[in-house]
Image 1 (cartoon, rainbow, N blue to C red):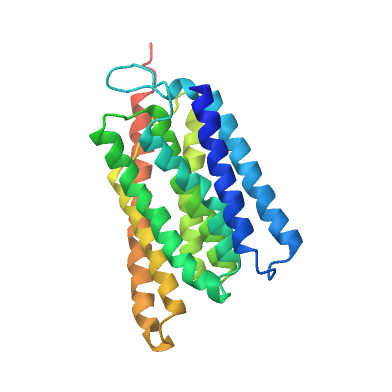
Image 2: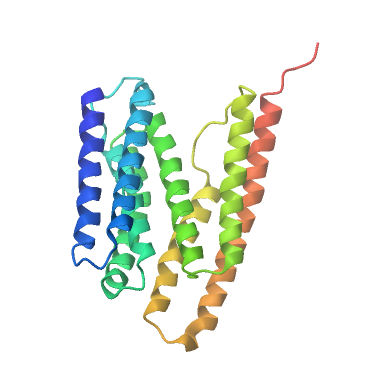
Length: 256
């Protein structure tokens, strides 16, 4: 398993480094900024490698309890989503450039689509693992966090929606951390509300890029979509609060 983890992460690291280098080939990207993204990519993959090696014992089939000998296909797909964070961030940073405008919607849509495919593959091939569930959450929230910051800097979505997403991510992390410190960790698994909120946000982020190609007269349509997406994300707060409340009651020690 250790060798499989190292090979998988190393391949993804090389792919991302090459993608960033190719996108910078025309020389329109300052060398310092190019180097910064390359270092960001290297650091992210180094951290990912450390995390996977630390928790490699979680590559275990939850049905049979048997460990996998190599990184399973569902996790490979999930890791691709995490690995793409530096390249997506790079594209968003230069979204005003003509070639980035063409590539960004395509790559972003492909990255987001992997979010639905990895879960289906895991269920159909009986490869559901604890590490897969952890990576799925990390990839979703990590990718959305990075994209949200980039969207805010480039004024692609309204500030109130970015605040809503960041608050959602913060409260999620805070709740998990509190229960972890109390030695009552919350099981890492997807919920319907969380899936809908994430899918809605991902869809909105792709749709918002369409504004780069459409006339300003359609702005009211996008405003309506933004409010609808914001309402869905806001409602997901209540589901998360209910989960933490139920977990608190379930783990409370009986008196006497």
